[in-house]
Image 1 (cartoon, rainbow, N blue to C red):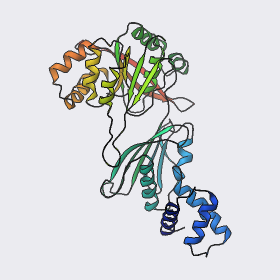
Image 2 (image 1 turned 45 degrees about the vertical axis):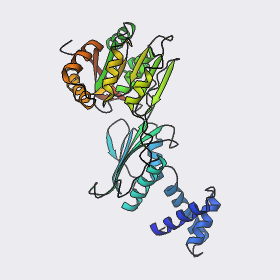
Image 3 (image 1 turned 60 degrees about the vertical axis):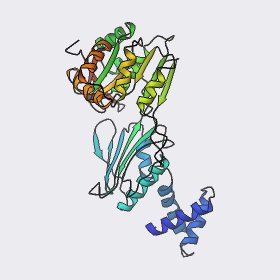
Image 4 (image 1 turned 180 degrees about the horizontal axis):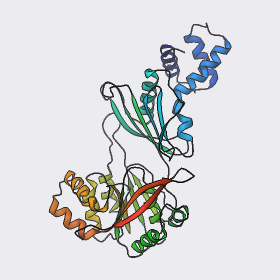
Length: 356
């Protein structure tokens, strides 16, 4: 089926506004092809069109695989998958660059975003594609010089507890004991590490050890944390709509969390000006807060937070004093290997700020 026929069928279906049943789509194919296609050709094109028009198209089986964490498209014949053991090239191929572009634009629409020449990149979140939400990023040419680039991250809920992580070998028993001690003492803590090392998984496990009578308010950019705790409130940020309005930032939600009678405030990933409000909360009676941050070692966390604090107008002296008073423990995760089920196998190192 040619791209022009796909476009004509799509336009007809939109104009008819009918439910997308196989019969309706087949009738549209026959009409737009001038009745020249036989039953076998119509059936073949129906299957192709269903792939083009629904879900994540030919990428959906990859996204639905139980171990997939990322699917990356860099060219029509270059689809890469990370299943927990690192990136490898899949056998999936698109017919041409136009097919990649059409999928990227359709996924952007599903996420309530716009992707075209005037807005050549997009961030968004998709639901209804497999059992988990999917984070979307796409860039169109000529910004992406070699063609449309599509990056999809499967947001699997972090549900394991500390005991499960210890049994799997992801963390040593001494690290689990340390986390339990931090939770009991109501110390604020940050978990640092690189991308994909298991920071969110360890944070969720730590929150599962919080006493049941305590109220946890979690603020996230994308809903990933799913700790086993009976009194958990989740707040999730959202981007602006296609008109550029309606944005709710992580910083907005940290401020709202303060009004929700939290015993502990948690930020899934500290990566912007929300660090200012988080530190203010931790220094105003909300002990035991937590979060994750991208940094290669505990010693690098202060510099990372200093850069983020500058985004919120907090100077170095003020940030250092607030951080020293609020955050007492910093742990680092590093990836050492992978386990059988595809989860990252993190090794937990502990550390403290040099100035504490």
